[in-house]
Image (cartoon, rainbow, N blue to C red; front, side, top):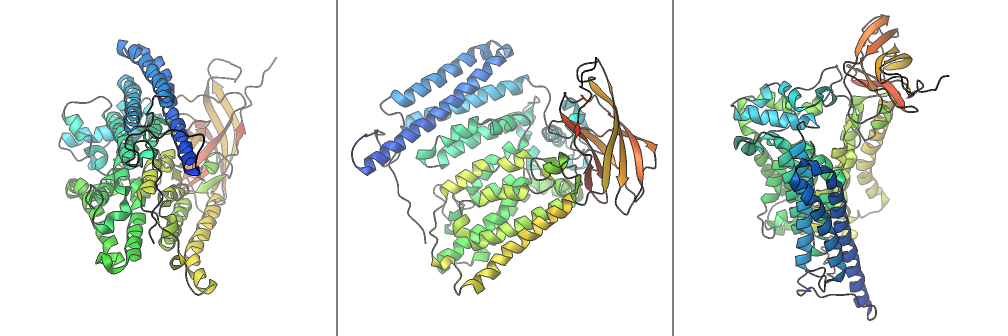
Length: 601
């Protein structure tokens, strides 16, 4: 059953063409409700101008970029102050014109402030951004990026060792690890002669395009979401500073907008194939959108099943047609490289999934990274995430009417479990999730959504969800209790000017490694003393014992950093991490309190 949601007239809506709805302190309940809605709108757009003001104030520090920056900073501040006043004083503060003014202010503010940062920057802040620029150059020179080394990216990173993606065997990735769209879409800019921070520029443009799409696609009453999201630091910061995910976000937003109209073969002013084609392009840029494909195919099938035989085809057939369009647009972007070297291409796009990379991210793995569990066996977390995906797909297929607006918010829960659950995996879906939730047709939950016959028929459906959930939880527990090594920190040596912290940088760390597994293991060491991205592996020298460490035996290692590594500040915790292969696992020492800062007479 499809619900017709009540429409409340708001400024800029067809129901209020003149945009003159104002607050009525007295009158009917409907009048008071409209007045409250207008007040909410005023407050929401005020937050937009506060965000513009904050960005303008921060931009003041970039005055040294040039005379133009010194002039633009106060202009941005003035624009924010004027906008906030207009929201509360002009006769039609929430008209379409005022909404467009707010959007343009957000676009200009983000473009100016983040564009200045890119203009001044000479190094990327992620290896993926540097890889994309190197791959683009190789492609334009007639070389296959998937068979070429990305070592040239080192000159675009400073220091490169702080930005590599490390593997558990002690090496770091030097191959393209994304589908071809990640660099193909920036190739036109490079071909036109643009060489400075090309990846960051196109990612910034993609984020601005996302803001414009959100403004157009959400209901007029919620258009303030577009500039608010545009100016939110957790998005604009990474998306304009090496976070290459920005490039797929506008395509994903377009893919999920009114996705439930696909069975009708009519999506307002867009043909039905635009959604799945955009999803295929998003999937051809990065692997993250891949997780949306099964949910959308299940959702399309559920829509066909709900509407009955009038659609002309069965649920499975329509869902497969949707998936075929996704696959076709994906292959169009990647076909030249599949033909060029299919093995190298496949190895590249599946590298983040099949290669044993070091643990990283803000998901459940962080408890092991921070020394709370003694380590973790990495493949078990990936298996737990796969089971969680199965459970969520099963739940969505059974209760699609309840989850229709929420399914895209579920995807980050899957990505919370693997051994690499970076922050961008957990927040990148938010803009698209909001557009999906606000643009689909609401569905009433009726008795037809429930299984007739009582608990004996409901339980089998629930078990399809409960069993993989319980198995996923069990695997997480096994993963955190199966670390193969036990690490004990025996001593620390520092160097540099004597300070209250005892020294400026590490000279060496001595650690004892006890092998608790039944096979000889070769550990590769990192020392973590705060910060986000894992630092480079340290050089390990055997002091006593053997390397590899034999089953049941112990070895004392002297660890020395391969690059300058600051010591922790007084009172900060740190730890030693060791990675092994077969099993691909992380083992850590207990959290160490930095004691060299103790004052001495």
